[in-house]
Image 1 (cartoon, rainbow, N blue to C red):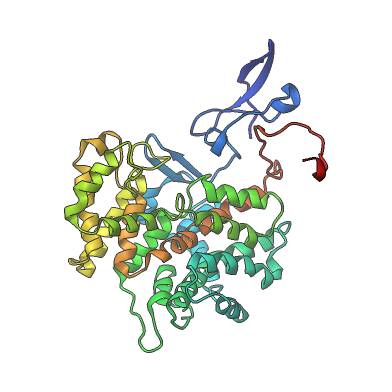
Image 2 (cartoon, rainbow, N blue to C red):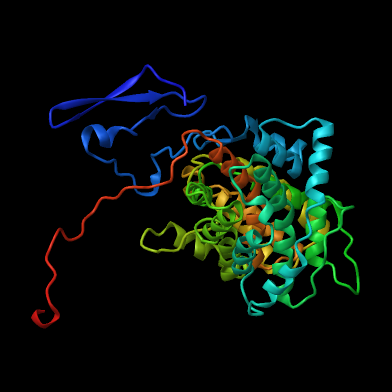
Length: 431
C-alpha cells in the first residue's frame, strides 16, 4: 500500500488523531485505522464489514453504482464475449492475459490434473445416498490435503502453484461425482480431449450405456456461467478463504472453508432460491399475486433473482447471462416447462413495472443462470456446486495474493461487547 500525504482528523475527548488516507487506482479513498487502537484506545464498529477494506488487492474491482465488474482491469462483458474460462483463470492467477504459448501450457497443466486419487472414491461412498452435493464437496475438497501432501506447504511458491492447478482441475470432477453419487449413477472419468466446460457436462450426463455428445451451444453457455462467477471481489466466501488462510492453513482447507460459506442461501444459494421461488409461483397466472406480495412492505416475501447487494444500477453479468439463456432455450426448444414459462413471464412483468425499474430491481445473474442450469437438466441442488467450482479460481487467486503479501497478519476482528462485566463465582448451593 503506497504512502499517502492526505490525512483525516478524528477528535476524541478533545484530543485529535491524524489518520492516513490512501487513494486507490479506482474506488473511494480509504482511511487507515490500523494504529487507531494503539493511539486512541478505541475500535471502529462495522457489522458485516460493509464499510471496511479488509485488504488491498489488484485482482477484481466492482463499482456498484456504475454496474461495473473488472478482472485485472478487463470488463466482464468483454471477457465473457471474447475469452473463455481457462483464459480468465490465467488472467486472475497471473495478472495478465496469456500469450498463445502460455495459454496452451496452462490448459495442458489443468487438463492433465483433472483426475482425482482413486482412493478418494471411498469418501463418496461414506455419504448417505441423499446427501446434498455441497455437503459432499465440502468434505472431499477438505480431504484433498490428505492425498496431495506435496502441495500443502504454503511457504513454497511451487507447491502453491501445484495446489492452485490441482484445485482448478479437480473441482469439476469432484462436483460431477457428487452429482452422480446423489442420483445413484456410476462416476464418469474426465477426458483429456475435451475442453473444460464440455468435460464437466460429459462427466455429469454421460452413462456407461450411452455416451454424451456435448452440444457446443450448451458448452459455451456452461463456460460463460463459469466465467461470470469466477471472482467477485471481497464477498463472504472470498473473505472466508482469506481469513482461513491468514492462520497458515493449507490451501485445500481454505477452499473447503470457502465452499462451506458459499453454501448459504444468501450467497451461493441465490440461484437455487430463485428457481424454488419460480416453482412456488407455479403458473404464469399467479405472477400478479406474487408481484403484489413483493410490493407489500408487511409481507416478508421478496422476488429472488432481482436486484443485487453490490450493484445499485444493474448487474453487468446479467446481460451476458440473458443472452446465453435465450440461446439455450432456443436450442432445446423448451416450450412446455412450467418453471421456465413462469421465469420468462415474470421477467417481462417486472421489467414493465415502475416499482421495480425505479428501484433498479433488474434481473441479476442468479435469475438467468438458474434458468440455464434448469434447462440443461441440472437439479437445483447442483446450482451451488457449479457456483463453487466456478469461484475456485477466484478464491485461489485471492489466497495466493494474500500469502505473498508482506503485510499478512492473522485475521482478528474486534467486537462491541455488551455482556456481563467482572463478577465472582457463586457456589452452587448458594444460587
